[in-house]
Amino acid sequence: MALNRKIPGEVFDNLLDQIGSLLLEKSSLLANEAGPVRDFLRENPLPHPLEGLLPEEFRVFCLSLNALKQWLAAEQAATDRYLLGGKAREECRLAATTCIVTGEPLDPSTVELHHPVRDGRPPIPLSKEGHKRLEGQVRSPPEDSTRAKILAIRKRMNQSWRNLRRGCLDILGRVTSHSTSSVGASSRSFVRKVSRETGLTAEQILEWLDTNSLGE
Image (tube, rainbow, N blue to C red; front, side, top):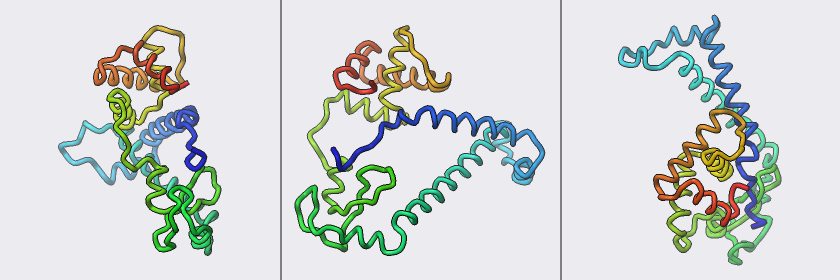
């Protein structure tokens, strides 16, 4: 739907894999070299029950993830200020009098701003009901059990359809490649989890993906 376009997450797999690898590499370096990070670890020792259970590299990786999360939040806030600074947000709320999804009159006090494409363009005003419909939050007829199960697993494991397809091809011994060995391992694990919970073989999962045009 033109009002709710989302770029497939797998498009950024390579970028995210590089960020993950960089975090691991830098965390290992910081954990083993003199400096403020080593000082912080020494000044904040682990409780006795955890000693020996959490490697210092893992502790620094967690600290790095938290720093990355704070950086992301700051950057997102900065882009919001750039896009919707001053009275821009209020002007967006008043830009329409009718919800283009439901056709109902818009109440300025309850208008929700929806981003049709997360590429920096201004949001559009919608009613709460219209926004829910676009985001798939309104109840619809139950999906087939296979799709529902796979969707639940995909969400839990934070995986993509492309990884499910490539994991199937890998398990079936067909020539494929992954951006990193860890991505390959997680893709195969995704397939095995789907297979256990749906009763489908890797070949049948691949056929299901083909039927639904997913992960191509």
